[in-house]
Image (cartoon, rainbow, N blue to C red; front, top):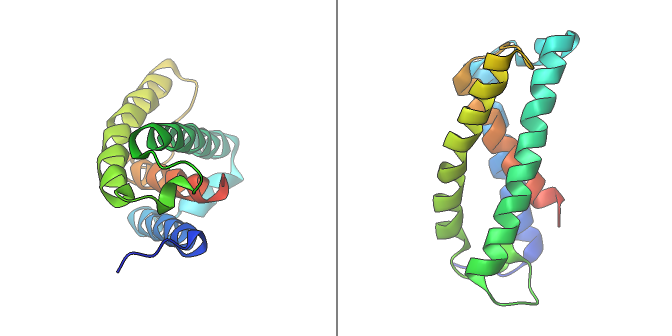
Length: 132
């Protein structure tokens, strides 16, 4: 059953983001301990900023592809299909950017690549919900 209630859709985005944070915690059990050192904090900040930029891009693309002005983009028909396409397309871009910054030494690898991917997806979804 489709619900056009913006609050319930925003809540669903936040729950999905929380789920990915939980999965990242299972993949990397000491995830929060990385925030106690500078390299971990910089690495996590990089992931949060990348999630923010990806969420802004997805919001702009959704406005173009989903049309229907006047309602929040996540209440429009086809949003689930759009997100199922957009999120996996952005993950390889994030991983390439992550590899570049790791290769240049601007950030240090403090977590596994799998945990960083789940964190990125979590912050994408959370930023999408928080930006509206």
